[in-house]
Length: 86
Image 1 (cartoon, rainbow, N blue to C red):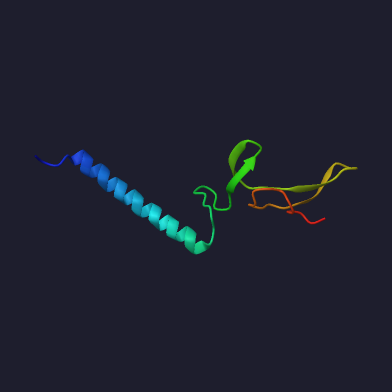
Image 2 (cartoon, rainbow, N blue to C red):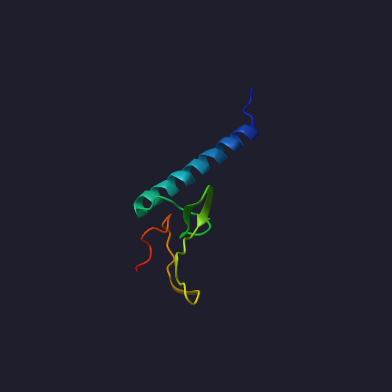
């Protein structure tokens, strides 16, 4: 019996996918990062309550009297704790 050309094609696709993933894993390890977003290299996995999203964290400092943002900082840290200076 001959080999199924569809099966052989799928196997080659899987091997190529595995090679790409191994290259991505190696690149991630070499960079020292723990996460990678394919659409936005600066984005990270964040928890917003019970929701899990990928994006950036932008903690803000607000002047309560005038309701104005007085400071903000974009970070890829997963929480707002200790992100802004007093």
